[in-house]
Image (cartoon, rainbow over all chains, first blue to last red; front, side, top):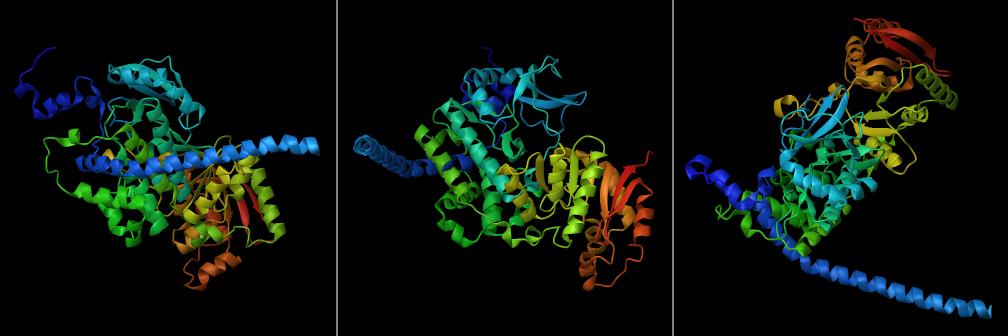
Length: 84
Length: 456
C-alpha cells in the first residue's frame, strides 16, 4: 500500500481511512448518521434488548402452548370420530 | 442524461437515455452489489414485492465510474412523501423496516432510509433504490436510524398526534423533519409512549447535546445483533401504534355524487366513460379526484390514473381502497391545484414540481372548476392556461352559478364573477383548447367538455 504523508491527506481523510479499517466501507457511507444518533441508538438498543427477549420468550411459550393444545385436540378427534 | 435527484450516493446514480430510465452501478460499489445479488437478498425482496425488479441492461455506463448498468421497472410517475396520505407514509415506513429486517438476516443492511427511495406501485410500497444495501458490520449501529426517524416516525407521529397536515413539513425539510422541531410540536403525552419517547424525544435531546468526545465518535457506539433486532422491533411497534382516521377532514365525508340525482350521476358517468374512450391513450390525471369515482371509471377502461386531491382524508380513503384491492391502477396523491408541489432541493432540481412530472395525455377536472374560480378567485383564462401546461386533452365539467354547489360557494360572499358563465367558460378555454365535444349532464345544470390543446 502506498503511504502518503499526513499533510497530503488531511485529518478528515485519515480519520475516514482509519475508521474504514481498509474495508473501503466508510468511503461509501454518504449519510451523516449524526454522532448523537449513533450513541443514543446504542443505548436505546441495549435498553430494548431485555423486553425484546422477554416478549420473544413469552410469544414462543404461547405459540408452543397453542401447538400442544391443537395437538391434543387432534389426538382426541379420531377417538371422537371413531365413536361417532 | 443523469437524473438531477440522484447525486448524493457515490454508489451509482439514475440516468435516462431515449426516455428509458437506467441505474449505473459504480466500481466503488461493485463488491456490495455482487454480495447483494449472491446473498439471495435481491431475489427475496423482489419476489416479496418490496424491491423494484430490474434487469441487467446492455447499455454502456454514462461515465467512467460505472461498472454495470441495470434497467429497473419503469415507473410513469414519481410521487413524493409530502404528497402521501397518512397510511401511504406509514406503509412506506413499515416496508422500509421489513426490508432492513430481511437485509440483516442476509448479512446486509440498508445504508439509507429515505422516504424518497420508496414509491407506491399498485397500492404497495416498493424500494426503488437497489443500491441501498451494504454489508452489515457486526456491532455497528444502523447508519440510517436518524434518517428513518426524520423521514418516517417524526412526520407520522405529528400527523397522528397533532394534525395530519403536518405531513406537509416534509416539503420544506428535504431530509426529514428535524427531531427537535418534531418533538417541540408534539403533545406531552407522546412522552408516555415508549417508542416515541425513545426514538423521538430522547433521540432529539441526544442530537442537540454536543459530543463530549468528538475524537472517539462512532467507535464508542456498539449495537449487538440482538440490540439491532430489538431496535427494529421497537421502531416497527412505534409505527404500527400510530393511527389516524380520515373522518375528521371535510372532503373525506363529501361525495361528488351527493349533489346529483341518480339520473344525473348515471349520465355523468356514462359521458365521462365515452369521452375517455375517445381520448388519447396513456395515463390520466384525475384532478380533484375526491372519492375516486371517476378515477375508477378511467382505471376500468384500462388507464393508469394519478388521482390528485387537496384533501388528506379523501386521499387516505382512496388509498385504503386501492390497498384493499378494490381499486386498481390508481395512485392517490395529495395535491392542491391552487398551490401544487413546487420544485425543491439542490438547485431546485432535486425534487421536481408537480407540473414538471407531467404532462399527462389526459386530465380530468370534474366538479372542480367552481372551486378554483369562485372559492379561490382564479380567473377562467388562468385555469385554462394551467391545464394546457399539464395535459394535451382534458375532460372538464362546467358547474354554473345555478348549480346548488356553486350557490353554496356564493352564499357567503359577493358575486364578483360576471364572466363565470357557460359562454365565458367557452371563451376563456378557447385560447388554449378547441372543444371536441360538449355534452350537457342529464337532470342537471352542468356541462361536460372534451377539449384538445391547440398547437402553438
